[in-house]
Length: 265
Image (cartoon, rainbow, N blue to C red; front, side, top):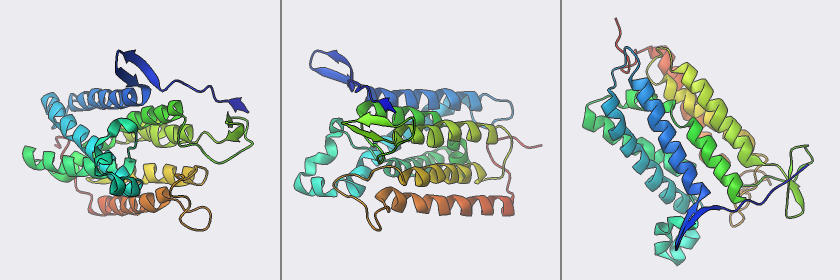
């Protein structure tokens, strides 16, 4: 058993301004995604220009931030918003939803595709390999914040938190939804794949990791378990992702339409 060190969530104080580690992890996520996107765009045969990446990332950032906050309010904080409509705007108090951020990104990148005259499928496939390291960074931010803990456990790596040994489910997610997803998707997209296959694999891998971890992760205290002492809001929101990912992979390999992200001979 390990003892949770109890990190200070504030990384830096500049007068009244407090810079939090959690906010810095989002900056890391966006910076790494930008760097990876530029690397992929610069590869021989790519139909993307390096100059396309800045516009692409701007749309993606808006989708993540707006979708993540609105999604958290709708999925996890509706009662707070009904009591105080300005709750939605107080981002500094915390509360971002991955599922809301994903919906926001899909909408934003669809608009980007329309603006640039690209097929939506190609834009989604290009994006699929980029967020893994960012997800890892944000989950580490959750760990630093001391939030999203798991159930009590007696595994050697359990963390002693407030006198209770708990599963560090933030780190489980960092490994499964972050590091593993990033490595597999980068490898998978390094070669030509059928259209929709990278996007489908992203959904399957993220959803599989999240669904597994949800069995150990504690639900939000004000929501609790939805049924059976195990079903969480995370399960409910993630299962459609898994089904959609499987459907996209099956469609991709049945149709076998070449991706528009690479020049084909």
